[in-house]
Length: 122
Image (tube, rainbow, N blue to C red; front, side):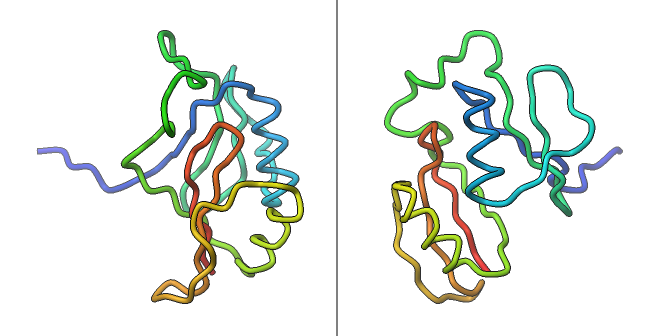
């Protein structure tokens, strides 16, 4: 029997592809990968690739309430979570959970431009 080995690619469906891609580049420092499928921006992350993409047919991301992806936890690693937090606050990004120290280092959660809850740790 074939088996699944684990997460290999994570993509968020977003209302405005370029605005979301710019947010992840400018606010989180991610770098675009040189190759991406049509309708998506893939970032050079490891060990799992991360992307933002146009919604699949029939999904209106802006109409999902209160948050798209509710029930899914997306965590991004950082070399300085507090500095990322401080930059996001300075740029008016909504912080959903203030920084705390825990088993994965300094951790906080913010809302991205589409309202996805994203946790940063490091």
